[in-house]
Image (tube, rainbow, N blue to C red; front, side):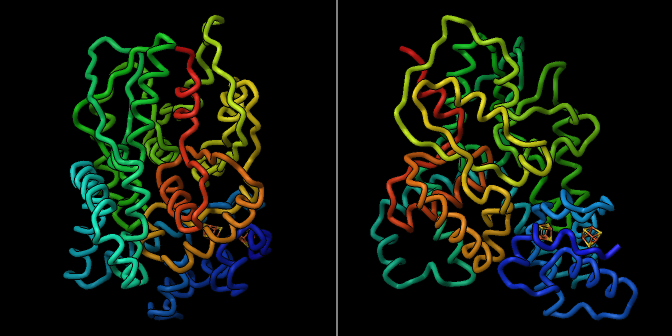
Length: 383
Ligand code: SF4
Ligand code: SF4
């Protein structure tokens, strides 16, 4: 089937209007490569790597083409067939990004860097435009604002296990503390172990599915007979790939299902909030209606979906580091319409999107807060 109904849903096709940057085009390229009609060239690689694996195309496909699996499978084969030294470097790089301790160190370094004269010097020298270092430097300001070490709370007798993932402390440090605070007020005992696990998403979508599965298996082996709840929607979607973890819940979904005590009335907040819906939440977890229901508990809060929610913001896991140009183009479009709506706050349930949006807001010089919905709920708890 090559009907093309997926084309209008594809963010990269909308940017380039090139069939090779569309879902249908990419499938044809993979078919051509697998049948031997096409060589794997730099040009072919660029079109395939340009895919966000946002899976928006799957939602519009009448033939239920498993596009994400096709792209992940093609990437796995490309990595397996690449030169050994290149494969090794790739594995080291993606494994480093998936390492909780390295991520926590990155968070600490970002805080030091952001406060040092080096940050101004790097901006002055336009080092953020360098292909290798630029994307990390660009995110450093956002990471400096979000990184916060988690205070472990290992509990044998708990109501749920909190999964913060490899980058939770770096990208969602404040979300962890807010989750613990809110859960405590709701009477939920949270187990937060000292050692954090990784869901394997970055490995999975970078052609290393076995390594990704090893991470998920480790999570499955370590889980207890109680709900496993994740604070980042992409991690939750990834964990659900394993049958043993298919019941993993996203934190807003979990909180929305709880019976809130009548006496717990959140304090009013006069602010305009735009709710960003990450692709992982929209396309893989069935949407973020729970976020809207939870925010409706805050009196006077003006809550709207973010304009262009159906389009990926360009973060897409490691995409913002690997494809900075397209990533920033997508973000620029997204922010243009979002900032035109004059929000005070933007909320998102995914760590990568939060960093990407915050970096964009900082670059635009706008005083708009970017946070997780749970942070907003915890802040409005009565004293
Ligand atoms: S996964 Fe997203 S970026 Fe990739 S082809 Fe589908 S819609 Fe386009
Ligand atoms: S992937 Fe689905 S929607 Fe896209 S061209 Fe093929 S059949 Fe049509």
